Image (cartoon, rainbow, N blue to C red):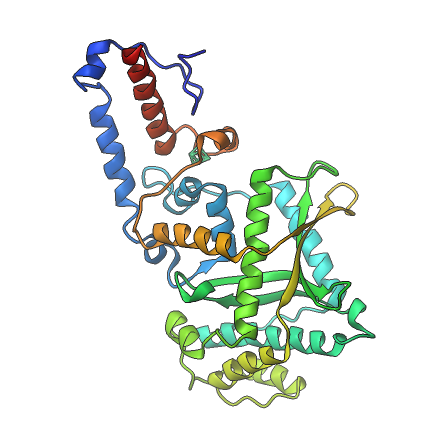
Amino acid sequence: KENICQYCQRTIAKRTVSDVATNSSPTKKAKLDLEEETKKFTMDPLRQFKGKYLWVSDLTAQAWCERQLLYDCTGIEGRPVEILETEAMKVGTEMHLKRELEVHTIKQIAVKTKEDKWAIKFLNILSAVNQLLQGGGGGGASRCVVREMPIFGKPFESGAFVVGKIDEIRYNSRDQLEVVEFKTRTKSRTVPSAAQRKTHKLQVMLYKQLFDEAVCGLLKKETILETIGLDPDASVNDEIAAHALMMDLTLPKFGDYLNAMLECFQFLSKIDSLAVEYSSQDDKEPFAVHEHDFDPVWLKDTLDHYNAFWVGEREVEGVDVEEVWKCKYCNYKEACDWRQKMHEKCLSRKSANKVQM
Ligand code: SF4
């Protein structure tokens, strides 16, 4: 048992005392090569692979395994990796869409410019906020639900700009706003592992942070314009302008869409509670709801740690030894340099123990 690597479960080759005493490990060169290889990809991953901003899904993937996320970006040895849509992913997407269509219709609008694309996001926010304002404050509150509301910003005014979409916002029993993330499960009625729940917790906390910052006026016009590289004087296409008009908004320039979106948040209150609802893909029914307390210190520490990777301040990390079971399900398990690195560590630790004994 003691000759099995705790990390990758491979057998550790027997090594002599002199190997350790003289530090003449036969794997030292390989280890240095691996470090060089890793460094190559951690110069500035944000700019290199993502461009101007991150999606919330990038951060939740990072919470699962940062090394896996980087392999998704780089491929293996320069070869891109095709990420196939599984049947479970397809069913999950269909269930999300069905829920979205329960509360509104979707209209396809062709976009030509970045400004068009972002103007549509702003209109979707304006529409969601209008619905919340109409439903809030008593009577209709319990019936008011908005789904797929875009949200973005620089959480805690530091780190990368993050863009996401909140599955659902509704009023809770205290007549306060609640964020609900909707997750589907392939095996009927089983709640996910603690590791998956951690990614869900991160997601709903991040939504609250971004939403609350917008409500408090901390989401700045200049940050959006500069980060994405948008022109406030640009025109948006006629179809978008016509849609705005249907919402009683006359917005001549892109900057007017941005101003209207930022202003509408001031009429809302902060998010009061966070929940993740799990539904089975078998019977399509919800079977569990997990509530999460908001922990801004944990969220900030987590985001700071993640951000250090995105700006190249630290090297990429794979999973800890306690979560090595994730590697079993990973497409990169054969090529993964992090596993190799941990194996090397385990190997030298075991050899050192032998010396001490
Ligand atoms: Fe992460 Fe393990 Fe996959 Fe490596 S093998 S990328 S450490 S999950």
